Image 1: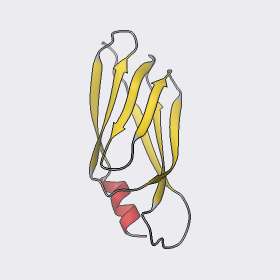
Image 2 (image 1 turned 135 degrees about the vertical axis):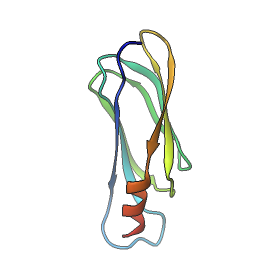
Image 3 (image 1 turned 180 degrees about the horizontal axis):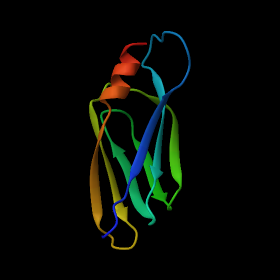
Length: 102
């Protein structure tokens, strides 16, 4: 595969004020490449976050995901044309510290 696939994983806090239970976040996975990807999934210590099939320039968002403190996660996907599986490590350090400071 000659082109690099870029994913933007965004996490936004949902709600305001202090929460007694786990904070809740929205997790967005976006395909910034020119090729479709299949079997997109985020592997992390929190609940299952599926991405499924994501066409070029599109994304999927999981709403109201309970946050589990994590420093890293792995985004897995399969290139639709080459069928080559890939794994990309994602840092959650900044997000985790922002959530912990609330």
